Image (tube, rainbow, N blue to C red):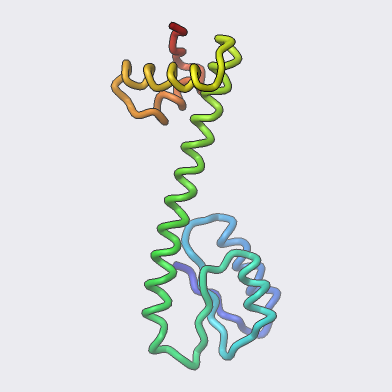
Length: 137
């Protein structure tokens, strides 16, 4: 987790937030001395997961728990979208190469995964990479 403090330059803090979020290494929490709605709105647009004020340090632990849970959920969704994207690309390749519809392409992909004794996304990655191709039946 990264904490970015709002010091003398809100622009510098916003740039740091954007840089850390772009790297997607960890969730970002903004630390502000007192509520600053304009900064918080802009920081949220750039990707913070929460903000904490100096005035309430006893609430930090709760905020950190929420941030960590939301970031884990975010990562899970991101992974699911990537898997879905690979599967859709593999289906598209099979549809084009074998002149089949989407349902048949998915069936081919699923059968190919079973034949290889692998999970669907691994079979899809293999098709996208061009390593092996399932046969149309």
